[in-house]
Figure 1: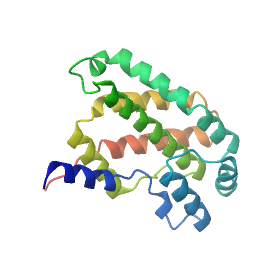
Figure 2: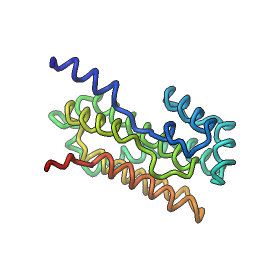
Figure 3: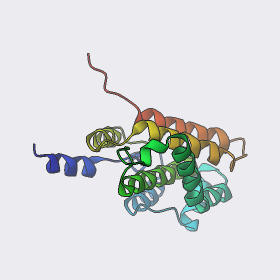
Figure 4: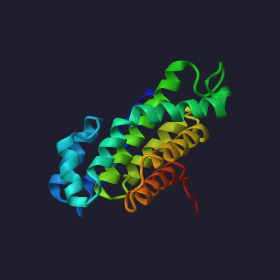
Length: 190
């Protein structure tokens, strides 16, 4: 299969969020998630209120996390560049700058979906097939998974500093843990 066709198919199949297909969530909640995810946007205040009313998660926390998303991702970016400066230098996996920008956009998108998961109180939120396609896409285009892991782990640390609730703190940790597990999953061959 030609390389461009493979790439297009992987991009079309890559999907992180699976909650919009979780029949244990109310239909309207799934609709909210589907629309927000298709538009690749943060949840609106009205959507947050609705989801949190169902889940009993603190809506203010969700709004706070969303409002700080850009800053938190920027801090994770700075941490990664400090830890592994070779990634953004000539010959590095995040060079030229367009590759680095794609990585930071992905971090923001991962964070966006984790916030959805927290709002729904569902730390197991990924789509298995979509994550498989994402892993294949990352392998195909040479995304430095080690660097992405460092950035996401730092994003988790920074996010935890924003969360103090007895329910929400473990939920945030579990959601990040689930994403990292799914991102780093390898195919088991028998």
